[in-house]
Image (cartoon, rainbow, N blue to C red):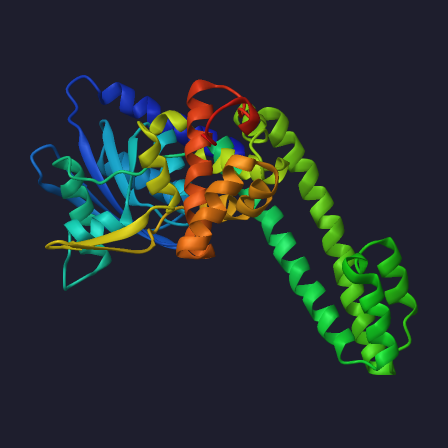
Length: 370
């Protein structure tokens, strides 16, 4: 659908909606959304089913259905998923109030042995009408775009790490002279001098061709990373929160932008504990009688948790307070528990900084790491 046709469709829908608003009632639309199609159920204010249909995810088809089945104002709900925002944004353009439901909490509330798209859409509409939808935070479009930039940056990095590992494995299977040459370069194998060595090292025909392909892949991924770094730099300049986080030990530009983007609006968290729970850095707790057990980290935002864990070791190397905290815990409970606890402390510090809109206070100027 062209942009002009899309605009005409939305204007037509909104003009029809405006003309009917005098005594029009509110409709409730449950959307069971999938990649290629969606099943929609429309209920009126009395809870009566107006219409149910399975639609292709084509804007003209969706708009025509909503225009006919819900000619007045409407609310809509769909489960949060990979492509849910596309449908949610379009329904919002049509003038509706759109909610995204937490799929995990929704399953706990509406457990059913028989599951069909029609049943699911009707159940969503009923829960929307009765105010029982467990909502999730809806991100702005600019924030979602920033998320995609950061995740692609990490994607290129992870691919490059795989290529580096393959190169090291290939070189480890060569004769002694080659292995000694690699050892002499140590961590500089993928620097300028190391890449010159890889272009000249003498290998047998098939291994030489494999190495050439891997080095070419490494160089190409390095170019992709540089392009991504340019987009990260733009985000860094646009986000004051990222520049504040960059003052915390262990966070460079990339991790700072990643954390800022994943947190979004910090004001949606009324206290630090809610942000810690969202990040999944609080261990699960099982209590029975007088016994309490602490288990694995809770389910949460894996990208935010990854960034925090990545920052732990660099932070402990430069901040005395964090270093003492980490090493004391590591000696008593092991490095993994200490790493998770330090990540919690880092995120608590970041929460306070963002709420108070201040930079990090170095350890030498205060009595604790917080």
